[in-house]
Length: 291
Image (cartoon, rainbow, N blue to C red; front, side, top):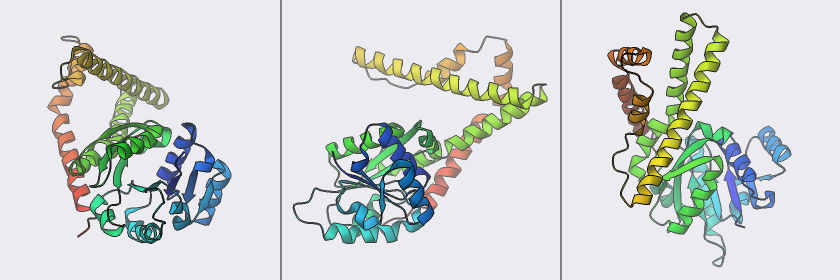
């Protein structure tokens, strides 16, 4: 099986390492690079994995996952480029995968040997518990097979989907920042429940379980919609599943309708739209390109 190098042993690097092991990857096929001695010791002891320098980790790896902070990318890529340039002509072609926010594939391609396949992956925070979603975008030299294998790697921490690189700032604004929007909504719901007379412990459990169950309903409904579209041979068209589920749980003139009316009057939709637009703009501002 292909060797996988994870450059960066922070929270996302560890999440990928743990996910790959859960998915059945062998320890001997995984190697990690981590500069902080204490962190390196922790990873080596907890996962029994080889922890070494970035250049040594990448030397014999087919897939090199760069999971460092954006500020550290340039130094790391310089080291990786030197190692790749010295590789034997008969060595397996390396695929470089970046989870560093805002760093374009063009930046990597400009630093690495000509023709290097580069994939950008944008996993979100729930990947830390194996329930994330990762958006993948390819550079100019990635084959369909290489993209499929990278997708398989990230499926170990949740779902995956493929987008164009131009869409990644919007992805960041929705799925990257989305968990924080979700937590804010839960926080507001808990506070409101306390004001309504519930204890904070009961309110928190109710809100968390309600959100988890609602998400499960939505995911199941989406899957059913896609299966029906595939069976009928007709495209899925415009997905109105969230709106349909909302209508299903809203009785005319009932309590839910009253609550929803106040949320609409309070400008919930406009506030969410403005939040996503602001996050997308900030993501664009933070981008690192080849220029």
